[in-house]
Length: 392
Image (cartoon, rainbow, N blue to C red; front, side, top):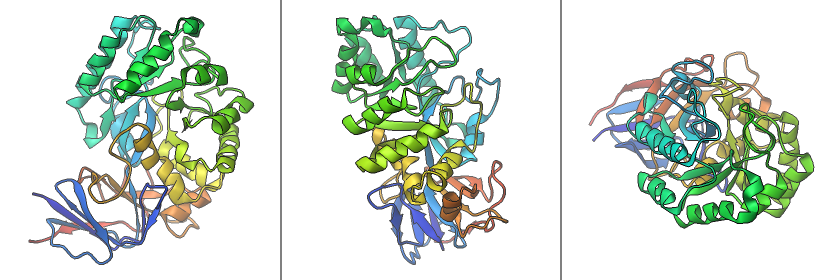
């Protein structure tokens, strides 16, 4: 049984929009689970982390990623990208489809799509690069799938399917709606590639009409990935549906501001998710999630602790995953961070609100410290946590 006590925390963002800040300065972790959060906790522990007044947030959860072979991505011919993202505060990645296998025929035939989903799910079940949780195996929906195929992915633990290559001229035959019914019957979430075509040029254009017909759970990169749907159609989706609304680093920044304006009007902050839509044509961006949180806070006017929730707890809830919030009984996926020396901000949350990048000192995944002192991907924080042995 291993234990960690984090003490002297300055601010604690929970990742839960209902209560985004918690008045606490201590976190006690045992066997990878947060057991207690409070003031002045003084439990004996194997390891003691002195946060020295810096900020604790849940590990960031990238709502839209494209893993392929472990930490190698053919899309950018790059290695170790998942480890680099972990140094950017990302503790979990949700796959939006494993699209970048060299030579993969697009759109894939039904058997290939199913086999690809099952293979990548099994591989990432056995691989945790630098401890990062990769929720892989998203089934790419194409014509010709059978209901038993949905049984197969459900049995494998796959919890997401995606419309991207489906031929929408076939919608009158009702097959796409059946896919959605089969998925929801098995508690599998449905995502749709919205807007214009992707880098492949093979994906299908989807705006308000297609989305209304299919009724997915999550509207993928609603502000563009890279090309958004018409602005008025985006606003109709905010106003007339309850779909989750995903913002990605690959998209249109002006449309992000328009989306947030509509979201504010509807009081729909709980529907906003943050992802990167990488690796792909946008590249590899280890600090992408941090930068998106900063953009939402400093430019779109979202309080920083609520912007953090859009990149953590909202994502976990939308995808039906038990991650993204910093609370008792949940996995200890925690990031300790502070303002960077030279920033005019007061702390990490104020850095987000001012548009500054914060510096990461510690990343913890399932109670294991994976970044012990400072990140390789951010400048050093002004204050760095101190890690030492405790005692029993």
